[in-house]
Length: 245
Image (cartoon, rainbow, N blue to C red):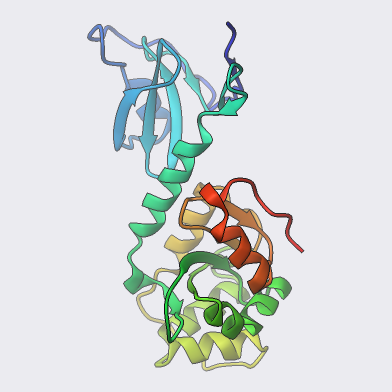
């Protein structure tokens, strides 16, 4: 039985490490390649001879001798299933929840909350603006929307500074709505989580906006109208990604 493992190089110059205990991988090389970061968890991987190492929102597989690292997915050919993606989904949820809702901009229904999604958004993104223009429809469908900022142009750009101004506004919800309507709000600065939001998005695979993270950890790229998103969220296991509009 063969197990297919998609391998991508983590960093140049990965070499052999020293001795180790028989049942514990040597993490020295991996930590050096990642700038000295300590792993959050280390456990047996689905494939014998590999360990699963989680550092922040990133998942890697490490060989027993600590020499080889795998940055990719493990496919179970008997089941025809990607056994890595469910773990990545769990890690995404844990990483986003660790941000804390006090560091998010949240639009909640007045009535029953059926689902909560986290949306990485850019103030100037056209489809982000379309999504937000329909925020009442999402809330009416029982969908609670937690916004994290993802200025696609990067830190210290115009979109980034707009996000900071929204965060520092006296009324963040109103400031976000006005900004997404193209209204210029007062430029402000204060301690803010915008850069942390952006870096988190990049680390979990956000490359465009809006990007919608479901409660199960599924990352949906692009805009979905409220009815289609509600349908997707109620599917058993939320399996599969609906095509964005």
